[in-house]
Each structure stands twice: as structure tokens, then as C-alpha cells.
Length: 192
Image (cartoon, rainbow, N blue to C red; front, side, top):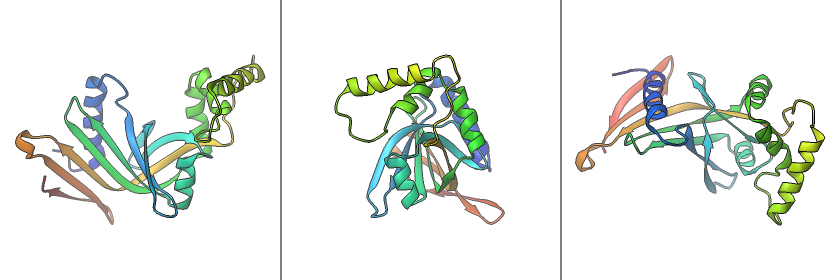
């Protein structure tokens, strides 16, 4: 048994990458606005390690507004085929420009163009409007690399709490809770 939550995460994540049919890196991201109204949506994990868990998004959408007002978030990985989940809670900060640039450059060209074309989370009159904007971006960047938009980048959730949940028969589940303490992590169990 691992006594470091990141070692345990790496092991579980590797199993999920091998067994989940689609998007083993999908995680629910929960945020709350300044008034405490919660919102949850799926995002994709694009980096992780002892410094935190990284995802990328438009920084002018609802997620970004919530995180600007309340820089705390919760993540949830649910791997149904493994009957496991991992909950993560912690402070959120921006990934560096270098990290955001490097990840953006690794995306497909259409994904890069889509980032420029989308006013994420804002009302859209009809699909044709978005498709026209996408075509416009395709023409704008024809024959050249697509740079990262200034309004697009990464966020890192630095965990204070990480819970590993494993399904067991008769709802007698196993729950391991890691809590950040000065100099490391404290581990305990939770009742199912």
C-alpha cells in the first residue's frame, strides 16, 4: 500500500488508462462563485504531480470567473470499470504561460482554432454562427502556426485533501483519506 497519495494516484490512474473505454482523464470540476453558488462540469486532466492537477480552459468563461472569485475547487475522478473514485480538494492557481503555451502547441490544429473561435459559456444564437467564426479563424491562421489565445490557459489544483474510494461488496467500501500537513501527508480511513 502506498503511503504517498501521488504514488497511489499514479497507480490507480495507470490502471484507469488501461481499462476505461473513453476519457480515463475525465474529471468533474466543482467550483463556486462569490455568492457560493456551485457549478460542476467535466474537464480533462492534462498534467499531474506533487505540485497538483492541471486542466486547461478559456479564462473568460464561467469556470474562470468562479475561480477568480473563489480560488478553491474540488475534482472527482470516477472510473466505473474499476469501481473506484478519487476526490481532490484544494486551492487553484494559474499554470505558467510556458506550460499553457506548451500544452496548446500539442493540441490538434482544429482544437487550437476552436479555442480562438469560441466565446466559451456565452450565449450562442445558432450553430452556424460558431461554424462561421471557426472558418474565419481557419482563414486567419492559414499557413502559419496557431498561437495560444491570450484568454486561454491552464489552472492547477493544489490538493489539501485526496480521498481514494474503492467499491466493496454490500456497500462496505474502503475509503482512504490523505490530508496535507506540514512537511507531508497524514493518512486515515473513513467509514463507508
